[in-house]
Length: 147
Image (cartoon, rainbow, N blue to C red; front, side):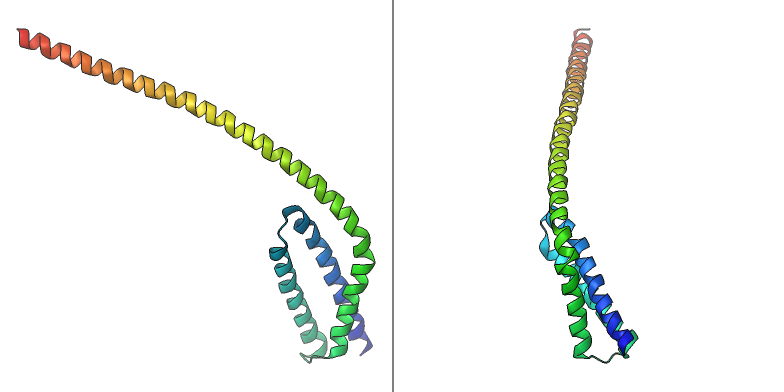
């Protein structure tokens, strides 16, 4: 009985760690729904497997309570300390993502300018050949009509 209670606390602490891992992408991407949904899906699978392994599928409130206590223990100790570090890291990542976005926009403008130059050259070449072709044919037809 004591072993499964210890593992309940351990599952709660590991879920706190998982929540801590998902905090960074949540802060960077500002998409709380997706990462919270993913966290709850994973945590429900982990808790379900815990109950299957240690309690043969029997649900006991003491186990739920200890999983929750383990989660709270991690969240209010280690999670509280790492939150500020993750916020600073997220700000730096956002800053660099903005710089990369600006660089990509300028690179897109350069590529677009190169494409416009290429398109204009090809269009002028096609129109000049097209005009020369019509002019040459007209001259040829006029020469044949005169004879």
